[in-house]
Length: 113
Image (tube, rainbow, N blue to C red; front, side, top):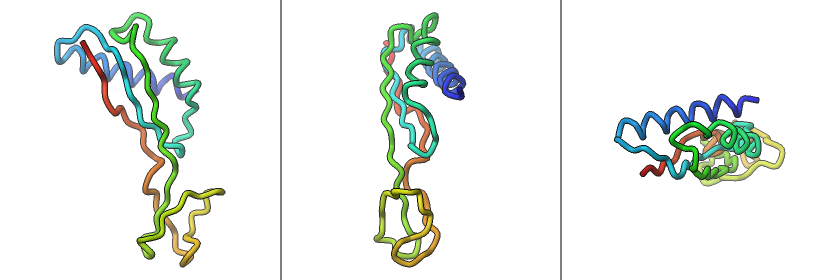
């Protein structure tokens, strides 16, 4: 379950930032996770609840934004599409496509008091 290690990193990062700026309490953490990352939302939420107990985030709320996979063709430029079967070739010209979204894994913000 890699969600536990992800959340451990998130809580460490948030706690370090709170301490660096003199805050004692973390009230909200927002994450942006791309679909292509293969992170199970429920497992991440479980990890957050299990690990936040003795931290500055013990009463915090976790918000997760899931970013859909979106691919773009470097040749056609104007073609953007959401794949049904993750076909990595452009339906217009057959060129390999590039990820425009869906690979994100970031802490969007941390609210502190």
